[in-house]
Image (cartoon, rainbow, N blue to C red; front, side):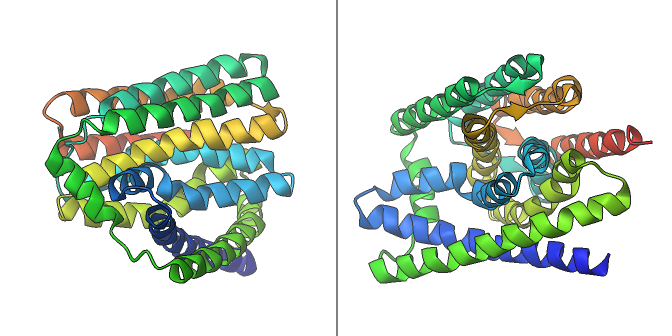
Length: 316
């Protein structure tokens, strides 16, 4: 058991280090090859924090652990909306000025509903996976077109976030280091997590849904709390919503396009509706005063803890 925990915890540390390195390298390379700092920053805010989860899921699919990958992809969304955003707002009120986040939240609800519809027959087929991937491409085009209309001060904040050195060799080195860290981090997590789950009586699906999804999110939770305290609410909400969309459209869509993906009916009845419930709670907050207060953060956090308790209760 100690060996399993050792692999799991070491894997989480390597994933956190690799995720940070690859985000910096991606920003530098994007700007080196002509992307504007604003576009580079926007894409990093939306999707950069999803890379550790993507590494874990790619490794899980590679070794035939599709259930773990599916649990992690869906569980990460609930963790993002409940734990990450709730903890950040509890630390400091989250002020959101990036206007495109509200329509992205609607797209997240639509994507989750589409996944439920696709999974009614118990499997997400290759064509349905391709539809999800095309949905990501369309969403990306929408983000790039809509972002031009953001206020100048909001754009300045995004540019500052993407600020990094653009020296080619340095960013290639960052990428190489990040690739190694993510590879071994994902390998150790996928190796250790099922052993821990077996000791706790968890199926591979629940291993991905609970310990892996929560564990891989912890560095993001810490970063979100720090960003909220610095007044960078756009970064916090952008990470949460963008990462959730990436998980559904790219991670789940990519897995299904590669190989038909079984979707348990429990996910159609509980986990995916739970993810939509968090979106429905969050949407009025972003459409109202564009501010998530400490009290509202407490509600999100308590809802997340309630969901975890329900999942564990259903095991007995």
